[in-house]
Length: 325
Image (tube, rainbow, N blue to C red; front, side):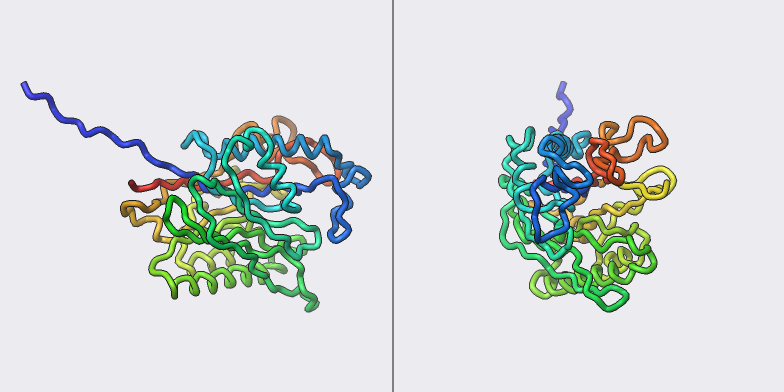
C-alpha cells in the first residue's frame, strides 16, 4: 500500500519590529545644555545611579521579550523615544539580557529642550545600516515662536538584504491641549508624506515602516493624513479600545499613541521579501500596575515626582514580519 505524501511544513522565519517609549530614560549626570536637572541626585526626582540602573534592567528585560508569545527571539528592530543621549542607549544595550544580543543603535541629539530623543536599535545580524539622518520638524507655537521639538529619525537599511526605510517619531505633545496642538502633528505627518513621495521617485514600491509615539490616536487627523496620503496600512486601528485597551492611559482613557504603520509592499508575499503577519500591544502582566485605582495600566517609573520604580508609562507595540524564503 502506498503511503500518502505529506509535504513537510517549513518553519516561519519571523522578525519582530517594535516601538517603545522609554519614559524619561535619563542618566543621573547634569547636562547644562538641556532641562535635565530634575533627573539628577539633587533634583526633585532624586534620580540616583541605583534608580537609573534599576530602570535599565527593567527596560532591557522588556525589550528582549517583546512579542515573545509569537516569536521566541528578541526584536530585529526597535524604535525608541525619550532617550537622553548616546550613553543611555549604550548602557541599555550593555544590560542583561540585551548584552548577549548583537545590537547596534542610531541616535542623534535633537533640539528638544528636555533632551529626550528618538533612536533605532537594530540587530546587526539581520539589519545592515546604509544611511541615517535626523529630519528637522519645523513647527511654531501659537505665538509664532519656534517649538523646539524632537526631530524625526530616518534610517535606510537592508533587513535580510531587502531594502527598507524606517521613520521613528515622537510627535509634539498635547500639553497645551489636544485640539490646540493638532496642527503641529499634522505638519509632522505631512513632512513624512513628502519624504515618502521623494523615496517613491527613486524606488518602485518601496518598503516603508513609520513608527513612534505620535501623541495622536489612529482616528486622529494627523494619523489619517499619514495613512491616506502616504498609502500606509495601520494595524493599530483595530487594537485600540478606548475603554479597555491601548498603549497608554490619560484621564482614565486608553490612548493608542504608540503605533507602527507599514506600506502596502509588505503584502506582496514574493520570495526573499518580508510580509506583514500581525501586530499587537505588548501589555504583559509584568508591565502593569498590580493593584489600586490604576490596576492594569502601565507600571510607571514616576507619577509626577513620586517614584514608583516601574518600567514606563507606555506599553511597547510591535509588528511581526515573515520572511518569504
